[in-house]
Length: 279
Image (cartoon, rainbow, N blue to C red):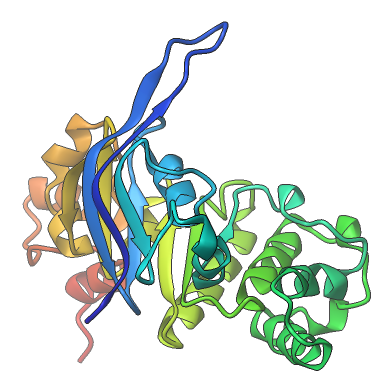
């Protein structure tokens, strides 16, 4: 399978300010992400997650090393729009991403800037709003929507640009449980349709839904593997101050109490089946 994102020996340094010394957010990072995959990136605050996300979309450029997106070097200004069309981005706060006073106009904003023909823009807007379940709100003012609805509009705006990859930078951090569940449903659906999804998250239950988890620490890869490989190594996660999904934590506690459970439980459904096997 081809890589949609490839980073080789990437270092990124934030310059000094009046209140903070310069520091390396990423340190000699090498990482490849395959087309069509679903990768969750986790780590403590300051581990480099959001910096990595912005490098994928060329919002930041590496100080050292190279970032390729869909075969384009992100430092090549001639291909800046190719990079951003290949890799869309959804941020933590949808209010920072919504630019228009009408929902459908906001979704159309990206394709318009790419020079897409008006008839094609209308088709893309229709399809994107349908994909996130917001067609009925197309004429609404975004500021009147709930946080979860705004985030769905932000995702629709990314979808309308027809990217091969979408980077979600903590898209559920400001949402209630219902909103988080809905956004994750959309991400899983996009992945099922073949879009590469890169999810930056602090919620371990969300990370457990990915195909692969990358843990960053001090701007470097600390662990890289499947959810089962990552979350069954509870000691390594605890050493970083990271949580594990509820099902993993509960299975460990039950095991310590003498309950006979199979190793490698990650999902709630697996734990329920282990405790109450269906006949």
